[in-house]
Length: 509
Image (spheres, rainbow, N blue to C red):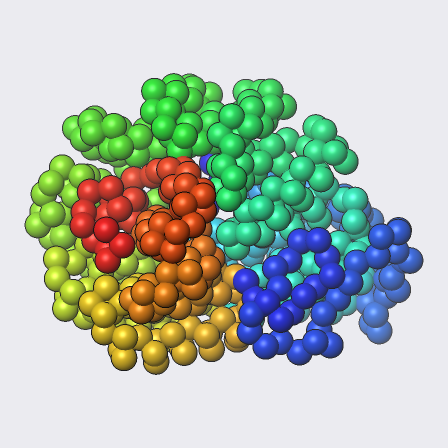
């Protein structure tokens, strides 16, 4: 399990993309090649150093709290998110003023259920923490904010302070991965295993990254995951990752075997149980897929998991050729998600309803209703997650109008995307902005520029399909083949994959 862009700001570290929107030049940072001088570890009123969490000096004098935070970070790195949250929470009980414990708690919780109270306490208590603890807290909390520039600056500072610390490098690489900067993420993970060949979480990320990069290499991906399994013997997550990446690579039987192996190690490892349903869906064994999803529902412990499982089960109707049943089921599930106050699930369902709408008018109506919801802060959703959600809505709206050659209707939306990218410094938002421009270029038959812009959105099967056609129409057949390879390894039971493989859904067809 992996738990699942802007050019004028060039940070002089070997990791970050430059930003295409205007950002003040004085906010850039650079990384020293040699060991940096020690920072002043005390701010006015700062607590003295009480010990260390890995390489980081921290204020707490509680050895138990420090041990629990190290345990929480290790669990986070191994995608044991619930365990990580629980360990960080216990650390705050040992020391109710331990800023890093609250920061790690909020950081892990952002991937399940955001915890704004833990985030607030992290920032409150960080003011009296040593400098290095403050720096790590700033990164862990700022990645959850609307403007990611402070997070980028904090991370650059961390890398300057700890250029050879595997945990700092892991946080960097993972953040890059989730920002869809797969090539840079892979390079940094490769750096980690040179520093520490036994740092198991890096092999997990490399397994995913090697099928997500522009030059996908599934053989290397599987080999990295096998190394991960060897280092983490007896743990379910390596088998789960092998199950997912095997499916990306088209090895469905291998996928089933690895998911089942994970469940033998941990019978309630729900992501593997869901994975079985996902793989059977792609295999066309729909009755078995439903049975596996039902097993996952029985082991679910929270509404967000339950809603996602029900969502995947609802999509089976479309794979079976029963779209009217699927749409009716999704409508019921959307109401259920609002009743459960689960904004992440609600967005997933609403986006599917928009993409699967039988007419353009219905699609635009749904997207516009979503814009009203996600155009302002949403309770229970972090701003760092709301921004990419809103950007995806606008990108899909632009694509819909480009399909119909209604270019006048795209200009205002593209401008809104540009503004959001500039405000958020979020690479996913930037990807949506650039791909939206690519759809417009495509409709104008400027296939060369269309290809350049569409290539910025590598995680969207629909966008990659348009990219393939743009490359072919511009005569760049080698790049078209590369894009086809990229599309091949996006194979998953998602709405977009269904549309590019089962429906005449885009002007690129």
